[in-house]
Length: 465
Image (cartoon, rainbow, N blue to C red; front, top):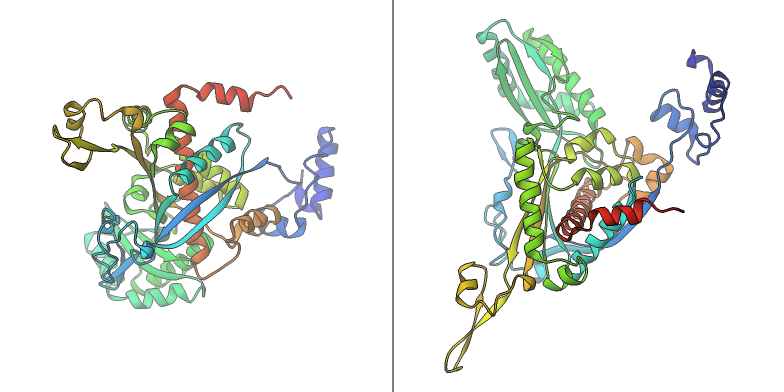
């Protein structure tokens, strides 16, 4: 069939119905602006696929006060993202020195923003929304999730071919000595884009360059590609080194890769919570020790045995559901699936009962040796649990792409982050996603630890209705 001869969505769909002698009545029912969607989002459009949309929450998110401060510092004309190691153990006072940021957890200045969010999740997997909802409840009962975000930037990685080592050095030197000119060329392609830094690697006659861009509230790969194309043409014209591919897989885009895990991409986010004994017992119906054991064998040992690049329970489930609901590029779910979940048992404070009962000293019972000394006062079923998630490569946006589609726009409005806001909406979106992922990890590991995973899926996903 020649789809070009059909003028609109309806004509194209009717042609298919005649071709296959069938009715596409459900595919033809949708509320979006078909002229805009068919011209911006989907070629040869015949209708729309509907995905059930559920809501979870509220989720109590506490944005750390120094979240915006720990982004980057300039070095030799490049912007180098600050490592997450700048975050201490939440002790001391908040200082203005970016290299020594410390806070007290009970300090009023510890949090820049504290807010509840409801999470729109588009999924066909029964039990997923209920699971995330349970995780949110456990988080809220424990005081809320702490989040910290780093803006790494969208990347594009062209590959050049040189004649020899000498020409390779010539290319590398050109990038170093003409950095400001390269920045200007890239940034002239869009007012919403800033070129921040680059990485350079070589093998044989091939030279790979990875450019990093701040794209504000947009995911920005279209902008990044156009800007990189302009840079490449400038390099070819000035030093006559041929670019073989504007995207040579050194970006690296829509594939699991250790480069994105180590050097990060888009947004890198940490989220953490110390679950209380009460939340674990009453909401999750298990113990901290059982969750820890499930995490260890699944996320750590099991991931290592299988060669997984995701040391987590199911990041991809939550990320895919949020991406579909809010109009993100679904190809980037694969990058979002990478990441690490960590847990640590938190012992309750115990009291050292002296023989004469003359004094009682509060002792933090984190060391396992205390269990042997005072076995009657330290019990597994009274423990709390520290649990965190780290997402090194989250490519998201609140403007552009599918975010302008009517239902996806409404989902972003539920979160209060639709449209552009000088990069702030995309940052908040990253924080929300990390919190939602943490909620999903908590609930899944709890379910595995108590042996209820199969039962919950049978109850939610196999209803006879």
